Length: 454
Image (cartoon, rainbow, N blue to C red; front, side, top):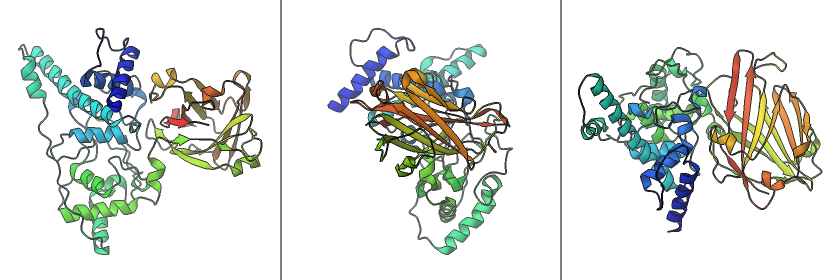
């Protein structure tokens, strides 16, 4: 009952927040599940997928791979042999996101809300396809009743792939898997699984598509054995990744070989998860010098990042250290610069930003990401070191051995509640822009929103 009340309260609050974006009559009762799904979609999905699910949201132009256009009825991560997603397929993608892309996990939302989102996307796909059928009929000089359009637009019943029990692992199985990989997969993913050599792959719309680096754990559909088996047999409809009709034993052999290509621990470095962060008590007074000895005593956390566009200059993540003393909160970031030697002229400077938000569940993309930011700190290679007196923030950076070391030091005598150092936690997110002489836009990389508390 309490869980239902929380969901109803969220939806009611969202109605008020989104009244300007989603016109609706005055609501006096708790919204229906479909209304709640629409509000959740407007808040968490429309910035990329667009209000009608056409893949044309305000953030879409910056993304590669592009957001799905739901009107096509084509979904990448499916568990079926007829390319029709199940409701569970949609729920899983919403929950886990897609590693190596800008699609974030939404596991911080209650399961009921994620299921409402999945149902809304499913219904949105059918409704939009029906609208397109009616438009086509009009162009042809005929009329197609809405009920008939809906019937024709409804996707077939999903034909779920049956995954047989896995056979016992043997050296012979792994050897057979390698043969199959070289025969079927290496032409795109390379013999070593890194996927670096092909730059001519395209999706069904003719847009460039790069093979993912298997060794780095970038397996979009999941890294469990059954996930890999499923992706081999089902493919990724609309992408350059085809389905393969292999016997079960061969599919398992190939699955085991793909598993063996992933570097130990690589998957954990790539997958974003929502974390509860707390600053450590500093063993000595904090200073803004990134090379100061005090930082050697502070535990570091690896925070994965999602590239908005899959580029060689993407930043996979950063080492984060958080500490506080009686007067300051300090955050130290360390990340590698894949773009080349320091000081190389670049149309886009290297930069880093930390955002804080009072919102319980801030939105991932702009405009909501910026609008719901209560405080932000930013450094760029053009601004260099500086102090920002109104917030009591000191910023210092050094570049060493091909990586950046950056410290933000914040005075806690000024509105500590804005950065989670009061009585309540706040959201915290990190962003890194990696400039490159060969890329005017640079590589944008974001984290999900984490929680920060004292």
